[in-house]
Length: 168
Image (cartoon, rainbow, N blue to C red; front, side, top):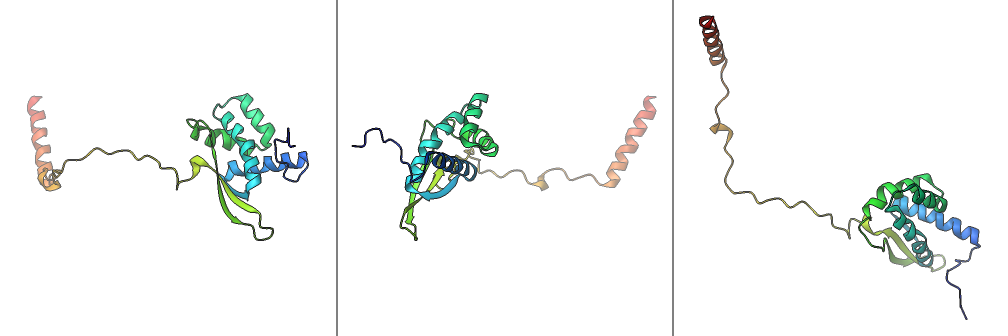
Protein backbone atom coordinates (compact mmCIF):
# COMPACT_ATOMS: atom_id res chain seq x y z
CA UNK A 1 0.00 0.00 0.00
CA UNK A 2 1.19 3.51 -0.74
CA UNK A 3 -0.50 5.40 2.08
CA UNK A 4 1.19 8.71 2.88
CA UNK A 5 3.61 8.56 -0.07
CA UNK A 6 2.65 11.92 -1.46
CA UNK A 7 5.78 13.29 -3.10
CA UNK A 8 8.06 11.85 -5.73
CA UNK A 9 11.55 11.51 -4.28
CA UNK A 10 13.16 11.65 -7.73
CA UNK A 11 15.84 9.17 -6.65
CA UNK A 12 17.51 11.70 -4.35
CA UNK A 13 17.92 12.35 -0.65
CA UNK A 14 15.88 15.16 0.89
CA UNK A 15 18.59 17.84 0.91
CA UNK A 16 19.62 17.11 -2.67
CA UNK A 17 16.01 17.16 -3.83
CA UNK A 18 15.26 20.49 -2.12
CA UNK A 19 18.42 22.07 -3.54
CA UNK A 20 17.64 20.81 -7.04
CA UNK A 21 14.07 22.10 -6.96
CA UNK A 22 15.25 25.45 -5.60
CA UNK A 23 17.78 25.79 -8.42
CA UNK A 24 15.23 24.74 -11.03
CA UNK A 25 12.70 27.23 -9.67
CA UNK A 26 15.27 30.03 -9.80
CA UNK A 27 16.14 29.14 -13.39
CA UNK A 28 12.48 29.01 -14.38
CA UNK A 29 11.79 32.42 -12.85
CA UNK A 30 14.90 33.93 -14.41
CA UNK A 31 14.61 32.44 -17.92
CA UNK A 32 10.80 31.93 -18.04
CA UNK A 33 11.30 28.52 -19.74
CA UNK A 34 13.42 25.43 -19.00
CA UNK A 35 13.74 21.88 -20.33
CA UNK A 36 13.62 18.95 -17.89
CA UNK A 37 12.05 15.54 -17.35
CA UNK A 38 8.31 15.22 -16.89
CA UNK A 39 8.57 13.93 -13.31
CA UNK A 40 10.85 16.80 -12.24
CA UNK A 41 8.49 19.23 -13.95
CA UNK A 42 5.50 17.93 -12.03
CA UNK A 43 7.36 18.30 -8.73
CA UNK A 44 8.61 21.72 -9.78
CA UNK A 45 5.03 22.83 -10.39
CA UNK A 46 4.12 21.93 -6.79
CA UNK A 47 7.21 23.80 -5.62
CA UNK A 48 6.89 27.04 -7.65
CA UNK A 49 3.17 27.79 -7.85
CA UNK A 50 2.82 28.71 -4.14
CA UNK A 51 5.79 31.08 -4.56
CA UNK A 52 4.17 32.78 -7.54
CA UNK A 53 0.95 33.12 -5.57
CA UNK A 54 2.90 34.84 -2.79
CA UNK A 55 4.57 37.16 -5.30
CA UNK A 56 1.22 38.77 -6.13
CA UNK A 57 1.42 40.67 -2.84
CA UNK A 58 4.78 42.40 -2.45
CA UNK A 59 5.35 42.41 1.31
CA UNK A 60 8.51 41.94 3.31
CA UNK A 61 7.21 38.70 4.78
CA UNK A 62 6.43 37.24 1.35
CA UNK A 63 9.85 38.28 0.04
CA UNK A 64 11.59 36.63 2.99
CA UNK A 65 9.67 33.37 2.64
CA UNK A 66 10.44 33.32 -1.10
CA UNK A 67 14.12 33.97 -0.39
CA UNK A 68 14.19 31.15 2.18
CA UNK A 69 13.03 28.78 -0.55
CA UNK A 70 14.87 30.14 -3.61
CA UNK A 71 18.11 31.35 -1.93
CA UNK A 72 18.79 33.81 -4.76
CA UNK A 73 18.32 37.57 -4.56
CA UNK A 74 18.14 37.84 -8.33
CA UNK A 75 15.35 35.26 -8.59
CA UNK A 76 13.35 36.86 -5.76
CA UNK A 77 13.68 40.33 -7.31
CA UNK A 78 12.59 39.00 -10.71
CA UNK A 79 9.71 37.12 -9.09
CA UNK A 80 8.31 40.14 -7.27
CA UNK A 81 8.98 42.84 -9.90
CA UNK A 82 8.24 41.06 -13.20
CA UNK A 83 6.37 37.79 -12.66
CA UNK A 84 4.09 38.77 -9.76
CA UNK A 85 2.50 41.86 -11.35
CA UNK A 86 2.01 40.06 -14.67
CA UNK A 87 0.08 37.14 -13.13
CA UNK A 88 -1.79 39.26 -10.57
CA UNK A 89 -5.21 38.68 -12.12
CA UNK A 90 -4.72 34.93 -12.78
CA UNK A 91 -6.32 32.67 -10.13
CA UNK A 92 -3.76 29.87 -10.50
CA UNK A 93 -2.08 27.59 -13.02
CA UNK A 94 0.98 29.71 -13.68
CA UNK A 95 3.08 26.95 -15.28
CA UNK A 96 2.61 25.06 -18.53
CA UNK A 97 4.23 21.65 -19.11
CA UNK A 98 4.68 20.73 -22.78
CA UNK A 99 5.98 17.23 -23.50
CA UNK A 100 8.79 16.94 -26.03
CA UNK A 101 10.77 13.99 -27.43
CA UNK A 102 12.34 11.34 -25.22
CA UNK A 103 15.96 11.81 -24.17
CA UNK A 104 18.44 9.90 -26.32
CA UNK A 105 20.64 8.46 -23.56
CA UNK A 106 18.07 6.83 -21.27
CA UNK A 107 14.77 7.42 -23.13
CA UNK A 108 13.41 9.56 -20.29
CA UNK A 109 10.29 11.58 -21.04
CA UNK A 110 11.36 15.17 -21.56
CA UNK A 111 9.30 18.33 -21.44
CA UNK A 112 9.49 22.08 -21.57
CA UNK A 113 8.27 23.99 -18.50
CA UNK A 114 7.30 27.61 -19.02
CA UNK A 115 5.51 30.42 -17.26
CA UNK A 116 2.10 30.76 -18.91
CA UNK A 117 1.90 34.55 -19.28
CA UNK A 118 5.37 34.89 -20.80
CA UNK A 119 4.82 32.93 -24.02
CA UNK A 120 4.11 35.24 -26.95
CA UNK A 121 2.70 32.42 -29.13
CA UNK A 122 -0.16 31.55 -26.78
CA UNK A 123 -0.83 34.91 -25.16
CA UNK A 124 -2.26 37.71 -27.24
CA UNK A 125 -1.51 41.23 -26.18
CA UNK A 126 -4.61 43.28 -26.79
CA UNK A 127 -3.95 46.08 -29.24
CA UNK A 128 -5.57 49.42 -28.69
CA UNK A 129 -8.59 49.77 -30.90
CA UNK A 130 -8.20 52.78 -33.11
CA UNK A 131 -11.22 54.84 -33.92
CA UNK A 132 -12.29 54.81 -37.51
CA UNK A 133 -11.03 57.76 -39.45
CA UNK A 134 -13.14 59.54 -42.02
CA UNK A 135 -12.14 59.14 -45.62
CA UNK A 136 -11.96 62.87 -46.27
CA UNK A 137 -8.51 64.05 -47.10
CA UNK A 138 -6.80 66.40 -44.73
CA UNK A 139 -6.10 69.90 -46.10
CA UNK A 140 -2.99 69.85 -48.19
CA UNK A 141 0.02 72.00 -47.40
CA UNK A 142 -0.58 74.01 -50.59
CA UNK A 143 -4.00 75.15 -49.37
CA UNK A 144 -2.45 76.81 -46.34
CA UNK A 145 -0.91 80.26 -46.64
CA UNK A 146 2.59 80.20 -48.04
CA UNK A 147 5.41 81.38 -45.84
CA UNK A 148 6.08 85.13 -46.18
CA UNK A 149 9.01 86.18 -48.30
CA UNK A 150 11.82 88.40 -47.07
CA UNK A 151 10.39 91.45 -48.81
CA UNK A 152 6.98 91.04 -47.11
CA UNK A 153 8.63 90.70 -43.69
CA UNK A 154 10.63 93.91 -44.18
CA UNK A 155 7.49 95.76 -45.32
CA UNK A 156 5.62 94.65 -42.16
CA UNK A 157 8.50 95.71 -39.96
CA UNK A 158 8.68 99.18 -41.54
CA UNK A 159 4.90 99.62 -41.27
CA UNK A 160 4.98 98.67 -37.57
CA UNK A 161 7.90 101.05 -36.90
CA UNK A 162 6.04 103.95 -38.52
CA UNK A 163 2.94 103.18 -36.44
CA UNK A 164 5.01 103.22 -33.25
CA UNK A 165 6.66 106.53 -34.16
CA UNK A 166 3.34 108.17 -34.98
CA UNK A 167 1.83 106.94 -31.71
CA UNK A 168 4.59 108.59 -29.68
